Amino acid sequence: MSGHGTLERVELGRGGPVVGVQGLGCMGMSEFYGETDESAARATLDAALAAGVTLFDTADAYGRGANEEFLAPFVAAHRDEITLATKFALERGEDPRHRGIRNDPPYIRRAVEASLRRLGTEVIDLYYMHRRDPAVPLAESVGAMAELVREGKVRHLGLSEVTGAELREAYEVHPIAALQSEWSLFSRDVEDSAVGAAAELGVAFVPYSPLGRGFLTGAFADAGKDLEAGDYRKDQPRFTGDNARANAELLAPVREIARARGASPAQIALAWVHRRAEVHGLTVVPIPGTRKPGRVEENAAAARIALSEAELALLEPIAARVAGDRYPDMTSTAVAREE
Ligand SMILES: NC(=O)c1ccc[n+]([C@@H]2O[C@H](COP(=O)([O-])OP(=O)(O)OC[C@H]3O[C@@H](n4cnc5c(N)ncnc54)[C@H](OP(=O)(O)O)[C@@H]3O)[C@@H](O)[C@H]2O)c1
Image (tube, rainbow, N blue to C red; front, side, top):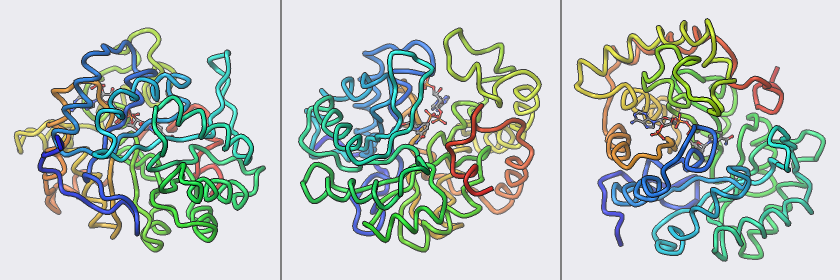
C-alpha cells in the first residue's frame, strides 16, 4: 500500500466503494487546460495516492481516449488501491467541435469495452453516464449499465448532470453510488433539486470543477487575457470579457478568508465544497483537477479546514452574483431540463 495519507475515508454512496474524501480529476492531464507536462502529471497521480486520494476520475471523452490510456500504467501499478471512475455518453469524432450525446444500449456496450481496453483493466469501479439524452428512456440506459454490473465489467454506477427527478427514476432501476455534477462557490444550481434527491436516496455527490475550472484559485485577474491560446476556457462565458473582470471581483471574500487563515483561495473554495456534506446531509467527495504534484497536498489539506458560520456567511452571496453561464451551451445540463 502506498496511500497512507491522512484524508478521511467515506463510503461513496450506500453500498458503494470506500474512498478518500477528496478525489483527483484527471481531465486536464490530457486536454482542455493548455499544455501538460506528462512527467509532472504522472508525479501528480503518485502524490495524490500518497496523500490518501483514492478516487481517480477520467472519461472516454477526455482527449478522445487519451486520458484513459495515460492512466493505464498507474492503474496497472495500483489496481487494488484505487477506485477508478470513467464515463461514457459524449461521442467525439474527428471534428474536435463535434459532441454527440449517446445513451443507447448498443453504444454503452461498445463504450465500456473500449474504456476497459484503454485503461488496461478488467473492471471499472464506477461507471458514469456523462450526459443525459432525453430522447432515450433513462430506464433503458440504466438497464444496460446494470447489465454491465451483472457481467462484472463494472462495479458501481454513477450519473452526471441529471436532475433530481432523473436520479430517482434511475435509482428505481439500479442503485446509483454517485452523482457527479458541477458544484462550487460559483455554481450552485444543483442545490435546487439534485442535492436533495441524492441526500434522500443515499447517493454520494461528487462535485466536479470545485475550483470553478481554476477561477476560484484567484489565478485570473482578467481571465480572457490570462489564458493561453488553445485553452478551452477562452470560450467559456465566465472567463471572457466583462464577465471575467466582474467575476474576479467576487473573489474578495475568498481572498480575505484565505489571508486571515494563512490558507490559499483554492483551499477556501474546496473547504466550502467539503462543508456541503454537513449542510445538506450527504457524502461529498469533490474531485479538484490538477497536473502539479505540489498542489495535491494543498488541496487535500482543504478537507480539514472547518469554515466558521461567519466565514460561510461571507461566501454565501457569491454564486448569485456570478456573471455568465457555466457552459456556452447549457442544453445538456440538469438545469436546462429543470426549467
Ligand atoms: N462530469 C462532467 O461533466 C465534468 C466536467 C468537467 C470536469 N469534470 C471532472 O472534474 C475534474 C475537476 O474539474 P476541472 O479540472 O474542470 O476544474 P477544477 O478542479 O475546478 O479546476 C482545475 C484548475 O484549477 C487549477 N488548480 C488546481 N488546484 C490548484 C491549486 N491548489 N492552486 C491553484 N490552481 C489550482 C488547475 O491547474 P493545474 O492543473 O495547472 O494545477 C486547473 O486549471 C476534472 O478533472 C474532470 O475529471 C467532470
